[in-house]
Amino acid sequence: MSWDNEIDERRRAIALFRFAVIGELEFEGLQRGELSTRIQDLAEKTWKMPSSSSKEEDEHKFTARTLWNWWMNYKREGLKGLIPESRKT
Image 1 (cartoon, rainbow, N blue to C red):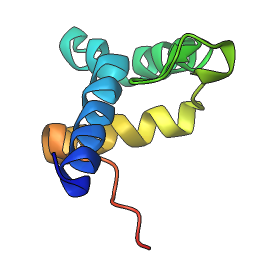
Image 2: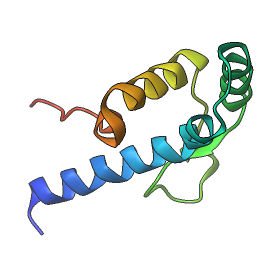
Image 3: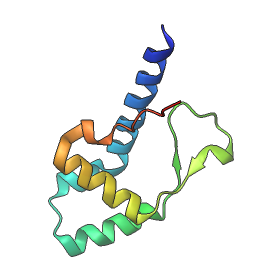
Image 4: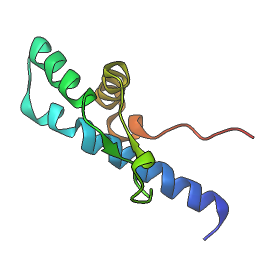
């Protein structure tokens, strides 16, 4: 596997992780007020990132703003909208 493929696999894994976090929002057909409440609930949870070890420091919380951004990107572009941009070196 080349370096680029490894990066692409990680980016895809992150997109799927993000979808898993916000996925329940899409399927429930929540109204905007309910959606805000649910996003705030999700922001209070701790999430284990993909490909991370079982150490506590590998767990993350995401702000409601981040979750809103993920949800809006998903609404606009589907799963492709959840793929993080490549880092430029």
